[in-house]
Length: 148
Image (cartoon, rainbow, N blue to C red):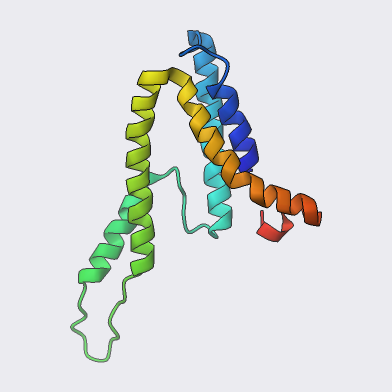
């Protein structure tokens, strides 16, 4: 899936001086939304439905739940204390921070380079997707070893 995402993002990021004509730009937005859905489906599958990467509000809510759990103290005798998921809290905080940083850099990059800024994202996706794809091609498993 990541390789397909990389190809779609590269198709949107290459080939236009800075910004394509309006009707083509609208098509790019649809393709990029589809790509976001692919990303969300892939991460949801890989994480066992623990993470939905395009739903930042859900991640912020989960951060709030973990922070609330961190401050909770049971006053009932014999009731074990509630333990926060510190690893989950760190992962969610990191993802939200990366979304924020990516949004700022993406907006600045688009303002500077138009759709060409997507070439950087496509290269990053290719870099992440190629090692498992090449490994699958060598072993003949075609994604089975990765569970997706």
